[in-house]
Length: 285
Image 1 (cartoon, rainbow, N blue to C red):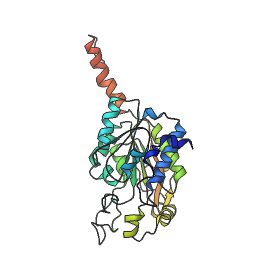
Image 2: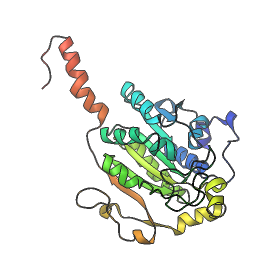
Image 3: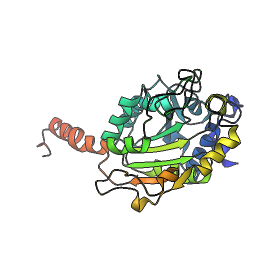
Image 4: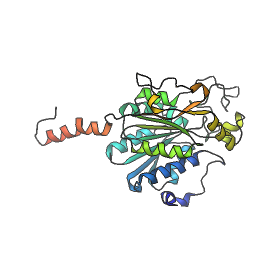
């Protein structure tokens, strides 16, 4: 298969647990990149720490394994230095919205051209099954043996409020749709967020009697409802309570809008006037 050309096959087999949804995310991502016919040298993948972070070790792109929660900070620096590169950042619950939460909201605010993939398995899988900012209230974890009392973030609403210009949500059950959404996110010129509900049968499934990987994916099938992007936003531009949300978690494309991208704006506002001043020309107003 052509997608295997994107893999560092010498690092296979992977280290994810049997049934982990992250392998499906990797598969869909590679199919999206193949669909876009991107050259490997034009892609940079950056990750932090966690089960999701292993993705960058398996792909034959430019890659960087960074600090926990800091992947978007590194991605911002790389994108500013080489704005023509496609920068993809796979993250888990903590990388994206716990220790990495501040970087997330400011990358969205700036609308920098980076694709953030949030692999939401509702738990910290690599470090022992602690509850995360995306663990549903009442669900159990190593650090919440009687059920967490914390309310989880809604990734779609958080990304919208912070200013992301492309927002989508899907699941590992909807793998073909995931490929389409990831391709659209990578093509989009601005900060793109794709949340993927991914099963963790090893920790989340066992602690919450959610069954094996198949049962958890069937839960994604039965517990989600598709939305129409044309009606996915309220009049003020934020995702409101969608029709049918009570029947399940809404999935699909929530936002795709054209707004000034950060690198382009920085070049026009800062770089070009500075270069003109250095040549003795009048500054651009």
